[in-house]
Length: 80
Image (cartoon, rainbow, N blue to C red; front, side, top):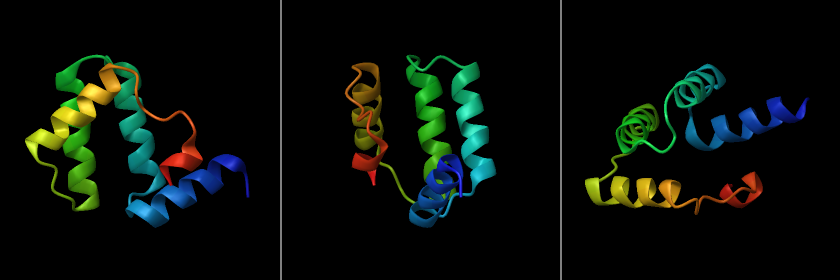
């Protein structure tokens, strides 16, 4: 199993979001502006819908703030 497949497998197992959906979201982020709060809010809401999780406006704002201020972990293992 390749590293990419292993990573997708871990993400899918934990989130129940399949590889295709992850790639589509990543594409949207590549095409959009990662520093645009509206783009980020849309992606957060889409991910919440895919995972069946509710994300409050307060939590959305906190996530957006972390991304805009470059405070997101760069080590994928730390996220899981």
